Length: 388
Image (cartoon, rainbow, N blue to C red; front, top):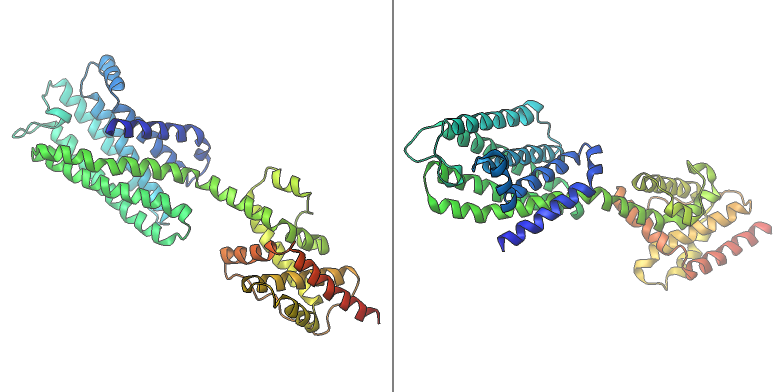
């Protein structure tokens, strides 16, 4: 079962590394990509065929432990970088990378000295109890760095988790927290196995390291695709707002940076979906501010009578959609601005997410036949009064 899990995670890591190579262009995504790359290399070192190949090339049965440990140090350093950026905490490059490089340098030097000296090690490349060798330095430096880096990563991830509200982002952070907890327990068990000679600590460490491998593999993989999912969500929201946005931009063209395109072109043309959505929200709000001046209290009173029979959850968005349609119609007909305009644009969100939710609800009823019927009736009444 363990071999099956390792194989699945191995394929997952390598697939994400290849598919999401574009993450190297993003400052925030780059650490995740490198963490997955080094984790994939580390898991590769655990495969029997890889071990046999390395032993054949180097002639050293312990080289697999060095390579996998160096990869683990790299994973810890990159995860610490990601956690610091996610928590918006500045950690100097000296602490992150020079300490990482120094740890790897000491490990490689210790390994070479120990191997050339013909030293004997226990299984898993552990030092022999009761003896003192450069191998003890190897493990002391490795475990110290991993313990400190993992604990710091855990604290920063918990802090980042509390700052994020979207579960699309929270999910990978939670998986990385679980993985960091598992790895910290693993490092503690390794300390007892290496320096205490406890054989049971080795078996225990094998089990507790599984959450780390699974959590980091899944967490980094999901996080690597978060920009894609956010872009897809922004694309869907932008398309949902298109009818409302186009009507306002057509009525008052100066509110938009670019004129509206046909819907199919607007949906399929390559673009920055999140930037498009942000502009669309701003332009809709600007259009509402302009159109507000063409609505009179009598118009709103009629609309409220009409929408009183619709379901309660539709009353507010349908009222807004109706008065906007009335304002667009009378504005296009050349009717002067209202002499006593209402303040109708206060309703909406207090931040980007709540504003999007509100405008989506208005856009959802924009093409509703009831909205068109109510708005047409009020518009005709207003135009008739203007002609008299």
